[in-house]
Length: 583
Image 1 (cartoon, rainbow, N blue to C red):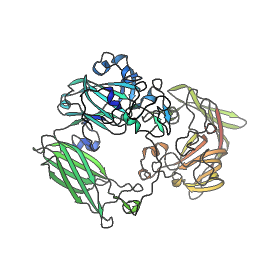
Image 2 (cartoon, rainbow, N blue to C red):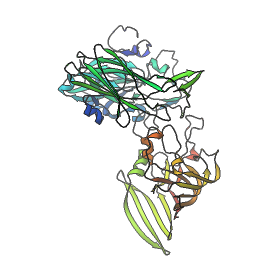
Image 3 (cartoon, rainbow, N blue to C red):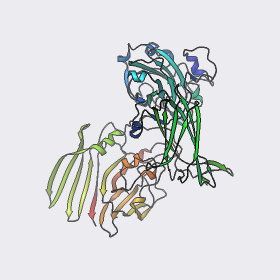
Image 4 (cartoon, rainbow, N blue to C red):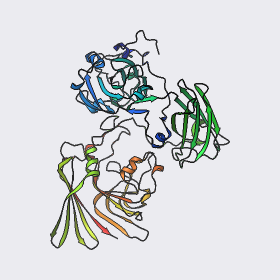
């Protein structure tokens, strides 16, 4: 980085490609660290304080319109708008700066005649974000470090009225030493976030253009001896049958003592342990680890490396942990190989993006999550008509007291009943993702036979490769094995589907153009898993019966939205009926 002429920020930095990091701490590994072994076992560190949640924020269209007094004074804090961090500002407060999507051109093309590395002085949305936090005496007696996991695209940091530093790079963590500026009691953090900087010329792809604090913000408290950077390598030899664990430990602090390293497997069994005197700020420890299982995306075998640091008096100062996968990547005859085998990439290229809050966490579609997961029966009625008995249930949720979904069960024989679902319409909401019912069946019901489109999963806008006919599968194969488990396995145009045990006993569903999926896991279990191997043995078979599911979209293979004819507006009423029969 170029030696800057002055220590204090000036807007010219935004257009200077040689100034992108001022007073940042060096990059380091992202291993977890704790004060004690008990904290490590509970995964609850007293050395980390989250600053996520409610912040105050001020918007300006460009840096010149952002009052500098917001950086140094709390006088206006109570007048500012509240936002939730992490967030992208264009999704948290679109009235400030609406979301903007461009593909191959730069977002300023056609608006201003800019030449690299120029940044607009007219349009550069600037948001000043304020967070108050309290520190105790033990915390300020340690080195206090601000950790910004992701800020887009440039950020200026102030604490208690003092300028701390500046950073660019939207998707790399930033760390700043706050120790000289914080004190016991209440402290004030101010982050001024700029949407555009010289990095915007390079951070340019076919995606939505956002700015914001889109990942978590936290304070880290470094003890007297702190493992700042932990590098782990796992070279394989003898045709990938022998594995070596190589570690490099970089520590900081005045009191160097010892490091004890322990490698354990998934069951907690110790595979290796070693001690190393910390006679320098950088130490190396390595050993051959026999009998380990290699890591791959298909079989993500992981081990836990624990590093315990002690001071010269033998007292534990820090406990660090990270996951280790034994693998070796290499190019062989111009082919990418992992552990000696050609890599097969499963999945898709994607941007770090959420449809409703940019790169944030909360989702606008949460109203449907609320209705489907947290509705309760508020009223039940029994009706007799034409010799048939109908049970009527009304489901409501506390957040929508005037809205109710009605489900009617009409018994018309000893072994069959009609099920009718009424959706009355819900105004001012996004298109519905689906409308249906989910049944949890006996786990012995695993044999599925269906007349509809198949044999593989298909959706209303993704079934050109499917054909209408009879198809059979096992419930365990009903989930499409994407790299990241998710709701999947849908079949459209279903007229009848049966789910039975080995003796043919179970349930049959029939109706007109239903959409059906059958698999062993609930949607929340799928979403919680990172890999298919994370899904443990199921205690149920899940049968979903829907009137419709929203289309998938992506007709151009990446970003196209769902076509209107495959969307279902929430404000329209919907009714559908199917028959459930015991077998």
